[in-house]
Amino acid sequence: MPKVMKKIKHITIDADKCNGCRACEVICSLWHASPRYSSSNPARSRIRIVREPLRDIYLPVYAGEYTAAECTGRNTYNIDGKKYDECDFCRASCPSRDLFKEPDSGLPLKCDMCEDDPALEKPKCVEWCLADALIYEEREEEVEEGEPNPPELEVGVESLIDKHGLQKLLETIARMTKS
Ligand code: SF4
Ligand code: SF4
Image (tube, rainbow, N blue to C red; front, side, top):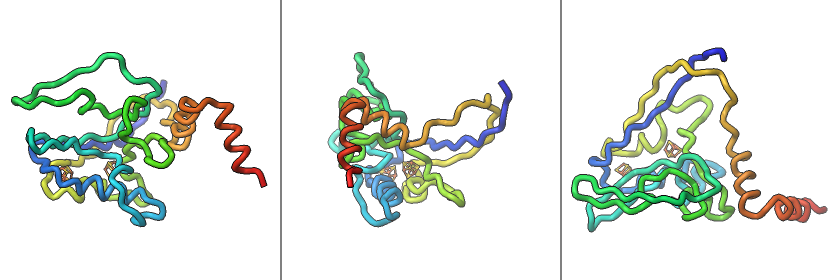
């Protein structure tokens, strides 16, 4: 398979620097509102902060891939004397929880690195993190040429089919488009 150069966008999370201010959640939801900046709702954010002040836990987690099935095994972590709950580190939009789902439609949310045209110098959450807990880098990498990732809309439709079944989805669309 032919190789191509690809720009890899990368955010390093320094959890020790996160103070749980949640500015990243606010700006992410504002940036992705339609029209842009028209509403702020951290439930629509593609980054979430696991925030447990009594346990001194502030952990930024980015929304990753959608999954149709929840995992059957779970892990807990003890790191530097702090105990993290099951799923705290998980990035998936998954049926077992409400995280990383658009609150009205239930469609999965995934971090898109604030893709825009022209491209931003850095993602919005990185720009707004005054504690420098999010560090942005770009690098070039040689990768095999392959299928691009499915667009958000495709992933969203797939998740609706998983949840409600194809027939019900088609009936709903037919009802909504009836003139
Ligand atoms: S903006 Fe930075 S410090 Fe504030 S919650 Fe997000 S990652 Fe943590
Ligand atoms: S990189 Fe952009 S899309 Fe991803 S969590 Fe940050 S603000 Fe949201």
